[in-house]
Structure formats: structure tokens, C-alpha cells
Image (tube, rainbow, N blue to C red; front, top):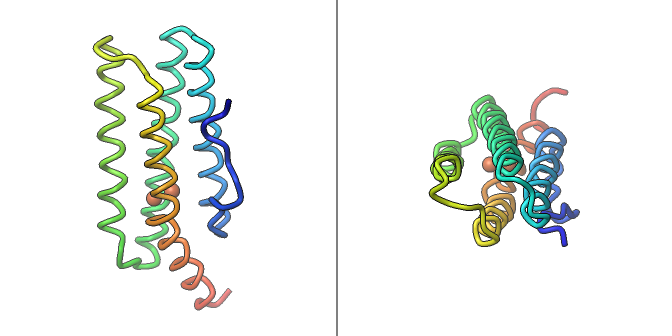
Length: 138
Ligand SMILES: [Fe+2]
Ligand SMILES: [Fe+2]
């Protein structure tokens, strides 16, 4: 069963952000599927590294949008992003060194982080950016 299923409650109403979030869910779900199907370690590592790359690019885009619109919560938001990336990189290092295996618990942690971050930090930022956009000409 899919663990990372996109649904309308995750939609924040800001198009590039929503599209990147959908892609993040899709990549996380592919990683989950690889694990559930007993795929090779090599494939699991490849999917994890694709997911981390996408997350880093997405976080950089969000931070750039927030910076451009002088979002007051940017620093706190950036700390959340850095926390997840640093955990993911530690985990990836352990996986590559074969000191860890990808478990259902790790994926559940990722799912909880993503859904909570979306519902709180990303939603606040998106609301601010939408009103900033509405307030500017065009
Ligand atoms: Fe996000
Ligand atoms: Fe974010």
C-alpha cells in the first residue's frame, strides 16, 4: 500500500510549491515501493539519493521565494530544512557504509516530518507569499 499518497489537503495554493511537493511525495513513494518489493540495496540507495537531491533543490527554491518576499519566518524555516537534510545525509552515509538498512520506521519518520512541515511551516510561508503576491502589482 502506498505510504506517500498525495491528497488535496496538502495543496497550499501556490503553484510551483505544490508541484514540487507532489514530486517529493512521488519520489518518496517510489522509495517506499522499492523497499516494500524487496528491491536491491543499490536501487534503494539510488532512490534515496534522488529523493534527497529533490528535497535539497525544493528547499532552496522555497528559501529563495521567502527571501525575495522578506518572509519573517525564513530563518526558522531554514533550520527545519537543514535539520531534515542533515538527518537524511547521516542516514544515507550509514546506508552506503551498510551500518543501517532502510526500515519502515525510517519512512514513517519521513512521512511524519513531511506532512507536519507541509501543514505548519510550508502553509504559513505559502499564505504569506500568496498575500505578498496579491499585494504587489501583477
Ligand atoms: Fe516544502
Ligand atoms: Fe519548507
